[in-house]
Length: 44
Image (cartoon, rainbow, N blue to C red; front, top):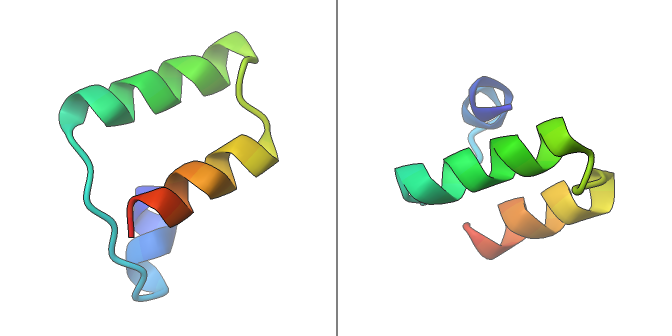
């Protein structure tokens, strides 16, 4: 995901803990596509 954002000139700022939480949320099935989009938009 980060590579695709970078390739499309979308820069986001996040901490390592935020990124880990995002990854775990996706892996556990807690986060859906809309949640990921919200996360990206809130970190621009």
